[in-house]
Image (cartoon, rainbow, N blue to C red):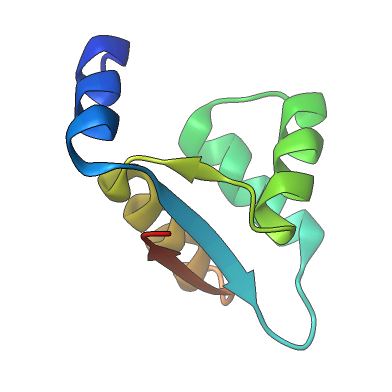
Length: 83
């Protein structure tokens, strides 16, 4: 999504947050999804993993819903919510 459109959506609708849960949050599996879906390198994926696990990963609702779906497809319990 273009940055201008993303910023507009955040202003209009507010941010959404990505939550992961479960008895064993699989860091490697989460990083694999993040790298595939966001096209980021391993270092960036590790940094983002920390934010995801601690509930600090935010973006537009469609972005967070997309990541939640991809994580769910990998067997990770995930949801996108509005704060």
